[in-house]
Length: 532
Image (cartoon, rainbow, N blue to C red; front, side, top):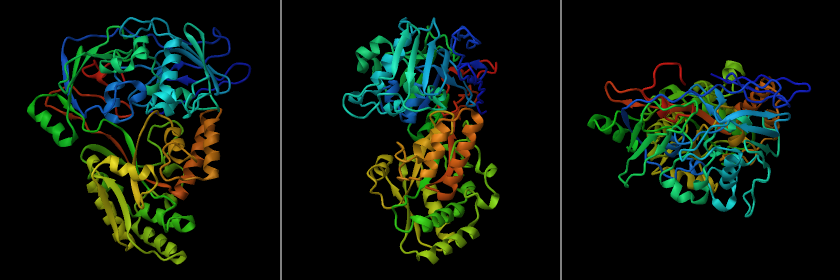
């Protein structure tokens, strides 16, 4: 379910309605303010639940969490100013209100009476101090990039967030370097969590058994390979846990996950706890892929792929053929079928048209060599990579092959230094439910995840308009223009969206997953009351 903006202009400030809670109020703190919904007392049950997940790879501090296996745990340990439900709707969590007149300067009021697990009150300073620590270059946090639009952010030594100001005990100001239409949505990301004083004094010690402000805390246990999560008795947010104790065991890959279920040691297992958009990047720097020739060849490759057949070969996730350059349910993200005539949609399967386009490219510059697709074996990509190369080769009448690398790190090494002499797969794990999450990061000039070094001034202008959009209509129009440009250039060929495949033991309670694929441990065994 997409989130819709309600915008009011005039003397009053910009107003943004999120899932019924008015988060952006008028200029006067008392004028027209509708507080966030009251948070109920958490229900408790006496049982416990065991599930298997891939092992965490980093410290469970908000700004250290990037990998899906880490996020699967950490998102249940922390809460942010806003929260996203299982359908992608955004609503208030720790925020009493958020307001802005220009989408560049925001004032935020933290709701009172929220506490960390150790009893410390959550205040404006809890956010400001945590964000500054997370963004500081000297601390080298992998998720620091989420603060890039806040004034003062930089990768240079000594840089710090100067755009954060504590106004009173529960209110602070955020100054951005540019207007950002979806900033409130971005605040749902894990790195925007507050932290207690003990975490800032000794992050390493805190990370060994985090006691944050989310539904669960980590119980200190010997290094047994399993984690024990306990319901946080001080949690008063919209995600009350329905289990007292969650035992998280380790299972790497679908075979180990299934074995854990069959052995009866866990009730559920999730091999890949992530929702991601899979693409095939074909950089312009490759021979035959620049200019008009490159556009024709990328379109031909896209049309040659039978996404339905390929996605059926993915065993560790539920894969659905891509319909756009964004993820379904993203704010301002429309499917290409709604934007283009069917004959112009590059995501359809049309091998005859693919062959015709390839011949047009040959007329400009005859093809030579072998088309190579680089994928990593450890993510379960070898099968579909080999099948995709076969489909392309058959449709276009060329030699095409998959280069199957042993692991993800080996694949990324050649991508990061721009030395990989082939097309390659990229998986983008969704961060927040807005189209810009994918479009800006992956396709803007110099974007942090623009692995193909794509640069197109018209796209940059559309993304600039998206960021400065005054309302949802303008944002959607800008995102639509951006997607039409991407459909023409195809710097990356969308393949499918992967969602978690949850394995359940007979009779076990289901494990709901969030919009981004993270398991919602708070909802395990929860009454069917419409909680999301």
